[in-house]
Amino acid sequence: MRLGEIKEVWVGQDPRRDLHRAAVMEYLKWRDHQRGLKRLIKCRYQQLGLGQIQGKAVFSRTGRAEFLDRLADPEHRILFERLYRQFDQAWTLWLETGHQVRRLGRPFRETSEFQKIPGIATVGSHVFAAIVEDPNRFEKISRLWRFCRLGVTDRTSDNKPLGYRRIDRAGHGELKNVSYTAWRTACKSTTGDNEVKRFYHASLARTGSVRHARLNTQRKIIEVMWTIWRKNRTYDPELFFPQATPTMMPRGVAG
Image (tube, rainbow, N blue to C red; front, side):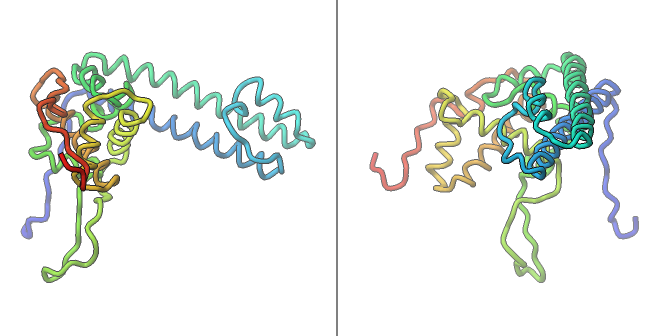
């Protein structure tokens, strides 16, 4: 206390949001658990010399039966059947928890508004709302960016840089993943024209760097979500990329 090193820690006071957050964290746990079991099952098959396991057929009811029949040792079959039971349980609990997450988050207006943003799906909207909980806890958007692992940090000593500037590793990776998934989904070649894609291409033309343009778009997605939540606004595409903004011309191309 004398050195002023004690920092304030935000603690939510809404029991409904606390329950919603707990359900979201459990949902993410079961998601990671069934993904880990998928990798383990494929790895075990490959160790037994069954070649590269591609696709999802190995996890379906009919597909797994074909792979189990290829096992010569009955003890191996017992081992794989146990892994499949664990996978089926993790998959079922993952789906059940997902239904609870959507039910608990339905009263929160922001979750439906988030899904109006191109690339933001149901899961992403609930994950963002659950982990952030209250947009007013962040006085500046830069603090929220850092919370989402999208802030930039550098180290100095005696006002001299100790390395390159880089993305700060502090924060929640799941929030960064929400913005990354939204960028990737909205900017796919098969996706139609939308405000997220227009913003990304304008940033790409300005910076000339795919990585910088992607990060700029991810930060913009987070900023728009924070703004409509904090100000209790309805999502408007103009808020993300105004149509009146002139199209950025690529470098070296005359207007």
